[in-house]
Structures are given as C-alpha cells and as structure tokens.
Image (cartoon, rainbow, N blue to C red; front, side, top):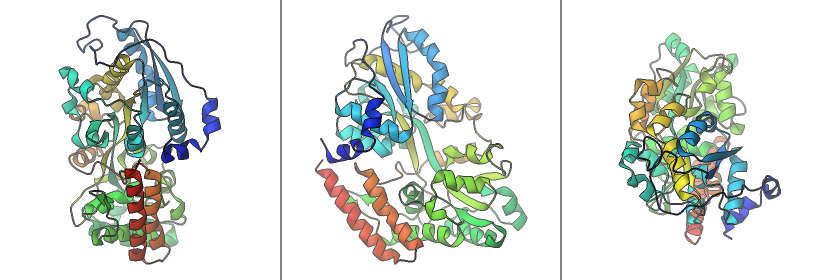
Length: 444
C-alpha cells in the first residue's frame, strides 16, 4: 500500500469502516453505451432493474441533485442509492473502499485538486475520455477549459466538473462610497484602500482572508499567479522566486497589519464570518461562498456587499479558476454503462441549469450565457464570475499527490512572515521541503 494511502487510512479508519460498504448490484460492461431520454437512448428504459450507488459530499450540489433523481430513475429504469458524508469522512471512506477493491460506489463526488492525483495514480478512477466523446449531443466542448484542466491528470480525464470556483474580491460598498474610494483594480490600489479604511479602534479592520497554515494556500495562490509566480514549474518547486516572495509578503502584510485579531486561526468560515459581522472592509476568497455574506440570516451587511474581479498584480489579474468538485467513476464498478449514464445526465445542460439555479456555479459556458442560468446569483456577482472564468489558473495549490504536506510546507512562509521571521529564509526552507515532496511523489 502506498505511503499516502496508509496515512489517509490511519485517520478515522475504525469509524469509516463502521459505516459499512454498499453492495454492488447488477452487471454491466466497460464500453460506453447509449444515453437516457433526450440523449439518443436505444430503449425507453435502457437500464431497467439496475441499481447505481452514488456517494456525495454534504454539499449544496448534493442537496440540489437529490430531488431530481426520481426523474432520472423514471427515464432510465435504474435505482440510485445515495450516501452523503462530510468532506474528510468522504475521503476516508472512499480510500478504504478503493484500497480493498470495492466495486462501490459506482459514482462519487471528489475534490480534483485535493484527491485527484492520489485517486488517479492508484488506479481508482476510470478515465472518461472515451465516454465524453462518444455522444456529440453531450457537447463536452461546452465545459470551460480551465475546469476540464483541473480534472485532468496525466492528460487523462479523471472526472467531470460539477462545481467551479474563482477567487474574487468582496468589499463593503457603503464604506468605499463614504470614503470616496474606487473599487480597487490593482493590488497597489487594494493595499492603499485597505490602509485608509483600517480603523481598529472602532473595530473596523481593513482586510481579512484565511490565516491558517494549510487553508490559506488556496487563497494566496491568486496573489502568486498575479505576480507571475507559481508553486512549481516543470517538476521544480518555485516558491522562493522574487515574484513568489513579493506575493507572500503582500498577503502576510495585509493580514498582519490590517487583519482582525485571531486571523492566524481563521479558515474561510471564520474569515467570512467576521466580514459578515460588518467588521472588515475587504475580503478575498472563493465566489462560491458568497451566500454567507449576502444572506440576511447570516450577515448584518447583506445589502452592502460588493464583488469585484481579483486585483491585478505585476502579471495582471490571474485568479485561480478551478473545479472544486467533480464527479468520477469507480474503475472497479460493475455498472460502468449505468455510471456514465448518471454522470452524463447530472452534468448535462438541462441539469446543470437546474443545479446552478440553486446557487451551484457550474462549468458549462452555455448555461452561464442564459439569463435563467444566473438567477441563483446576485446580479452584480454574475459579471464578476463570467470575467473571472475567461482565464485564470487551473489549480489553487501545488499539484502533487501529497498535497496536504505541500500545503503545510508552503503555508509556513506566510505564518513565519506574520510572526516576524525573515520571509526570504522561510521561502528557501519551504522550497526545499516542497521539492522533497515533489521528488518523493515521483517514486510513487
């Protein structure tokens, strides 16, 4: 068993095993077949009597898809059994089942940039390249290139995107208007605005973002890219370059000098929480969590939140533009035809439209171009999402198998800078550690 797998199994194995494993039902073969109704189905109910097992995360997309399942079952004749788990428990459960060669689940939600490399390298996911190209009506070219790139490993499609994210700038419209400050378009303008609005004596802080060592990595990534840097290039760690150090310094200085108390212990729930309490002027994070700031039941500033494209650095505005969640097929599934039928249906234009109307940002360009496809989002957020989706970078963390170790190594740069240590020395140390992780993963 691979070292990274042992590590995953070592956490909560007994608890996960206690949940039991779903039994495989029905037969199937490995070749793609015809689709459900509206997709050129060879029969009214081509999968009559089949049972498909689906594992989802406790995520809004999972909640949005469940009410739609009866229609799919009616169209295909198959039964879909669903289990849902919290993110970490989901990873542990899948790891246990795949390691033992389980044929279930047939289809599962996964985080391409967190588990994609591990799952693919271990042969746990079925490449979908032949499936997506078999039926022209599926129109796989409708998916954004960056989203597809996020789910691609070694030039093979490991999953289909279902949730996309881009880093954006959240801000207080009322504070900027009162101070006569224009919405920042560059990093220099952001820093200047943060300084002007920072008023800790009155519990108003200029900036907040994730400050915890591992969680901050995804959000500092856009700072890196916009300065022309990245975590690694051509198999070499690059977090010690001048461009990278500038990006880390900007992020660390904003948090250290203009962040609220306790920012070192904040992941996204805490960061957006204090922003929603009306105590922060600017906040950078994923667009997908906007409801935490705009829902009146969660936010005291619901009608005062503005959205903007991530500010430009020396290399322009280059936020991450990723697939945060995808659907994948178990390579050991005994129901591959049925599994693909479900993935195709769940990621079709019709269903993406319906899940997106519930506030789940999908990856199909045609859905974003429809007025009805944007009704689940604030009107002023839609153009920001569209603009951010045009380019950006297809990853928000080091693309390695041992991604947890890599996040910890690089995150130390920001933490050390915030506590007064030399950032160049911290970057050199982190670069050595990241390179060791990269080299170790090559042997797996």
